[in-house]
Image (cartoon, rainbow, N blue to C red; front, side):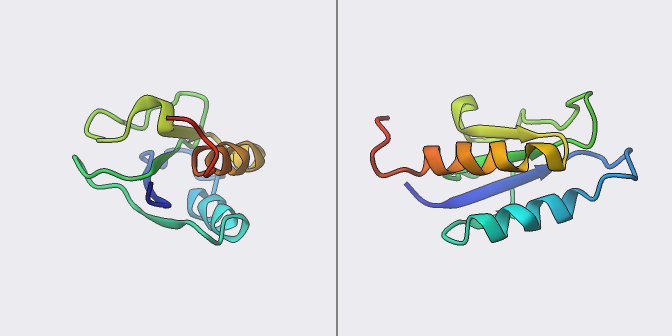
Length: 96
């Protein structure tokens, strides 16, 4: 499975949360993965859904990534969780 992660951002109504900085932090923690903007209908090894608040309003309807391979974060406090979950998804020992 490809280590490409499609990133989908929320609308950005929470101006106190730098969503792109959170993704850059994940990129540094996961140097073997590539992060790209998720395109509708395109398959990726996983999807990172970046919400800026508790509303979880980021649309995933057009993603071609199964729900069990979508990781949702809502702030910097979720970065370590996302790192661990993405490592698990890309583990060579994972059973599909």
